[in-house]
Image (cartoon, rainbow, N blue to C red; front, top):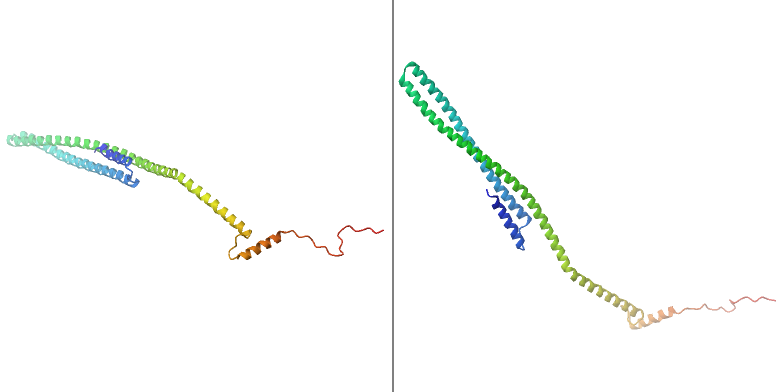
Length: 241
């Protein structure tokens, strides 16, 4: 398993994101990292199955070796018994069988040692792969969080830059709108003044009606004096002698 191969793909992924305008989304990055993690986990499972197979083979060899050693002991006992009886033929057969069994046992013992060495090597590989996968998982989660934060930061920066780029145009639009509003207000005030003076007629009002309205307004604006009633002396009363 080459850790550099996986991280090489991740590096190329971020390099493409940096150089291109359109990069993968957060979900795509997370899915690719998760896929790499799943691939490593599957390889680890295969290694563990291999360790289990080797361990099973070693145990079978050990069982066979134990059985051979019992047969060797039996053959040795038979050879001794035959010698005690003076039966050279049976003694020779028992010894020959013992030698054959011991040779087979030696080969099985070598095979058992090889399987034990292979089992230990695979266990070490599995432990190393497991550490690498755990390290990759931590880095994957950290990288996904950093990518999410960087993407959010880039979006905020883009929005801020967009606001800054359009602020001048917005200011000009606001200034034009304010100027136009002042012009409309001034025009409306002028029209109201002209209508009040009768120069312009109000909606539904004729020119004569406008002049009569002006006359009435002018007449209403003239101050009136109180009428003197004959015989009513508002001056000081005369003191009679």
